Image (cartoon, rainbow, N blue to C red; front, top):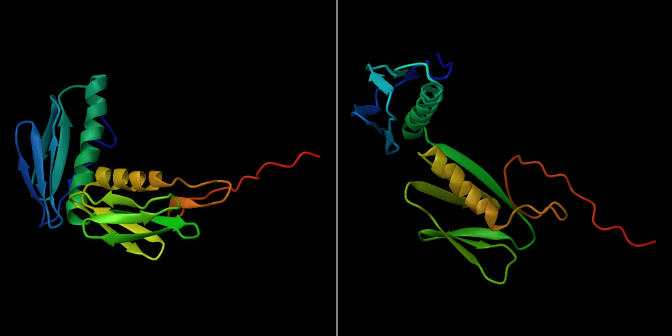
Length: 178
């Protein structure tokens, strides 16, 4: 049995679960998500726990068992608590500000960059910190990675956008010809 797959997912009273043949709908105070369930994987719901089962011990079923359980656990946590990532902007003149339904970045290029805020994601800017939050863990991580890719951290000057707590080791530049 899968170590991850056999652990039941605890449910709170404000989470509503709707089980269908090949889909699970999860609704909570932060939002609503649905996940497709692969063939051979079963989901059972009592009022306090969500349990994922599999029909046999084939390699594919064992892999899907843990995956589906993790995805459902992330969905339950997302609709109750939500997820967030923080990024820092380092560099002289580098800044960001929220304008309407987009974030305007000034990152040393010849033009400002307007990054549209997708539905279900909330972006806040305080000083040189950018906070990305939402109920979908995958979407929060992808949007954070997309923002970081606008100006990746430079290991020679230590400028750019990086995650809070991300460590960079400064590289030495070219040494002159002697």
